[in-house]
Length: 305
Image (cartoon, rainbow, N blue to C red; front, side):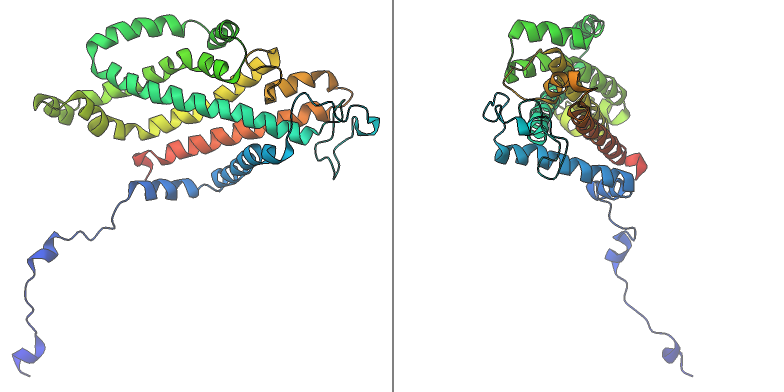
């Protein structure tokens, strides 16, 4: 058999050697793949989405208000246990607990979301500058040492009384010092990255501080920031509930889970559903937020991919 029938010469392609045979890596696809691999986290995400939809959509149709005496004379509507008409039952004035719970959840979740966004935004920016600048560090570390030694709930109480009741006043009281703890956590992480070889070389070449923060450091802290958010959300909801339980922060005509739980504390023995149903909803919101946030934080860490 002839040699040309056994072998066939092919032309060499220089571009083929440059191609990478490994699959392309996508950070966010890897994050989503890691997150959705946890069935428990997915179940908590479904529960959280359902709770958020009920909290922000149901009050639009119920028209619930705290001060409503329209049905107070109808004694047949008072203290009805949960049924098909009133899913969570009614209270001493005949108002639906179902409407009250979701109206209160809307307020509590809204305050927690806004407070988390504000404190995280300020804390990340200040913390990044704090970690890079030694002059800023000398000042901010003293501020942190003072604030961190005062219980946050005491600070919230003082500012809540000082600013007066109201949604925005309570939000200001929550944010006025809470960002400092976030900034300190970011500062610690930034100090771990700022002295690495590529950042030292970048600083030597005259890279601006803002560019080092946004390009060289913060992209590596995504999992840390997500972890902070997952801790802040349940924390602010808990603080709002505690302040509402004490009757501080929000005005009397603003529904919140804390105020609802406080109002129905006296019914814990006679009509227990009025107390335990809001507590159960509160528990589902905080637990689902924490589990989803922590799982997403773990998934956003490239070392887990």
